[in-house]
Length: 295
Ligand code: PAF
Image (tube, rainbow, N blue to C red; front, side, top):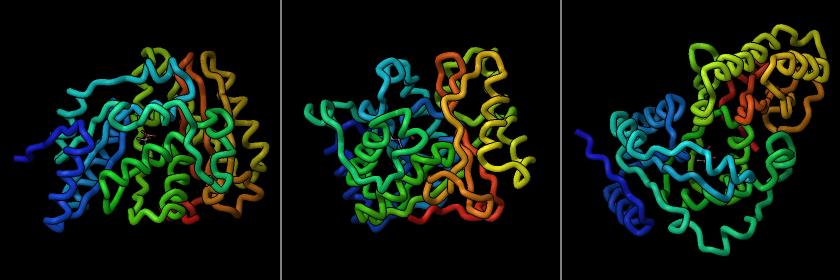
């Protein structure tokens, strides 16, 4: 039987990692903010299958939240998460406190990084500083865990592009494994934030993916700009849904799509009451076969 360890201190994690490395074992890493759902568990199962040891971090990272109430309301349930992870064969959970990870000055100042423009669009426009916080925590976690492979979901498409860029820029010897979006039977993309939706809001939120999937029928006949307009109008017509942005971009550069010949992805953020949900859809079948983003 797998005996999973729950570690809170960096020093304890470092000791565990040293033992694993000196035994010549490989490490698969899944960074999370907890409130685990089947999307996370799919990443964990893949990490367990492809590596000798699976490490999962559970840390609601304060530096990537630009809205204090979102940080406060982010769902947290460590004992439930731990039981789920043990059932999937995870070996080590790293669940530190913010004080264990950050010195006081790091919590009060912004982390600088050259994103090569990838942070200027979409999420970056509406969540200033968000990706600085993501790169800050993921680079710290990579240094601590020293994984061979790290697993990320494509739901956070822009985050994934930025993680690839970070690994290339900072020369981390980590293979980033891109994992497809896991959806509920209704089509709703799985997200920890879905827990905050009432039954009625959840029903409305399923319309987001329905509209995205329907929008594929208009490619290549409508221009990207017209399709953007169609998607935004269609979703905003649903009472209780409010689109923050929908953009169709080149899936490698994240810059505005010029023609359907480029690899394309449509990324959306929608408020369902006060809960902010994101999703995305690929429009280009060639791109669907390419699971790695090279920068
Ligand atoms: O995707 C997330 O849950 C977070 O952004 C991550 C990668 C765990 C960093 O805090």
